[in-house]
Length: 360
Image (cartoon, rainbow, N blue to C red):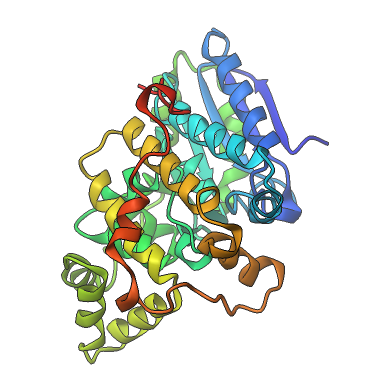
């Protein structure tokens, strides 16, 4: 069975990520299959809208997408395999295609939605979460940055929530994601099979009708807001990573202390890079943000020797050796050289040769 099931049912282009044992982590082949399906349906008058879901271990739903396949990243980076470059170029093109897709695109984000899973859902016209949704951009934990358009969508969260989520990698539950502006509505997971079936059986007149109908299925939420929002804004509005940490470490409350500890465990270099990324992204459109992120990812993997790559080391510690003891270089936020951070934002390509130069 294919890792992506893409077929037209009724008037809906249905995409099911079908790699449940790997929590539907995206491979290069999966990125290509999703892209091919979306491009094929663009001009197809039968397809009014697209719906995307993940396959869980028990059947459809229960897991959306845990992100890119980080073992593949490690393997290709250490081998100098050019498929790594292809992966990020094609993945970011797919992210752009979803954000700019002219037909409604409904993402049913049940279960794990992380990293690359956010990339194929945040551009949706209707983003649906459930009580099982676990949403995060946890890249600083592996010495990476929130890519797949993360700078774009995190920087547009309310207040300084984007900085908080990008730097800490904090995981949001379903209702919290709606309050964070990263989902449009909440549906109890038990209703999803019926929702999917109704989508494919209903003779909708147009795409807008599909979109409208899905939003009528939203359930009332119990939570009225995100907890600790005022502290997030106060701390993560600070001008630098050191200032953020100073604010947190000198505050006696438990939330501040726990958040400071989390930051101290992340890659110090990448914390600086991520803060700069999100702040720059606030002034960028999607295409320019994706170009910036394509530059950043080349710096992470290709322009640093493998033994000096924070990302290769972060993945090693988490997923390869599983010792959970990354040797970050440098070890502390206070030791990061500003020039080293600035270098990440210098594009390795002239504008006319950039791999994403034609994104509009």
